[in-house]
Length: 117
Image 1 (spheres, rainbow, N blue to C red):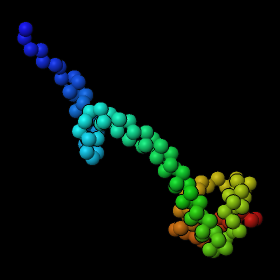
Image 2 (image 1 turned 90 degrees about the vertical axis):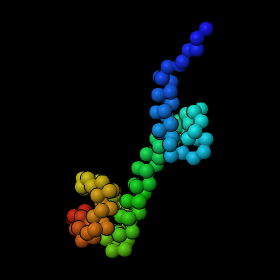
Image 3 (image 1 turned 180 degrees about the horizontal axis):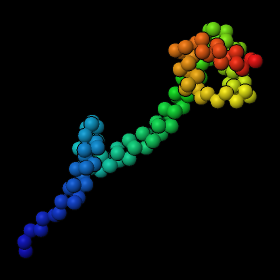
Image 4 (image 1 turned 180 degrees about the vertical axis):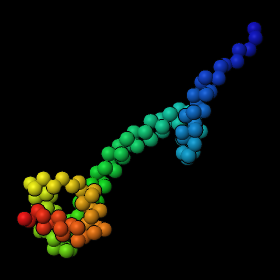
């Protein structure tokens, strides 16, 4: 009986997975089963961290706005500023407000005056 050589499809699949895990340490970049487990774990972590990143940046923007408001005594607190922004229908998101607060505090002062009118 002659020897049957296996096809290349499985090897190609494993090679593709190995390329994904080439930067992992130890068995996580060498053993096929461990590579598969680590790949799933890495993709799950990446999915979770995309959500966390949005949360962390929102916290950072809020902190920056609040710090500038209190430092320059533009407004009493962050929550009142945001509440009055929505009441006056000045729809500026927190990212833009934080950039204005850091780069150009005079502009933030003008916005707060617009709210107080």
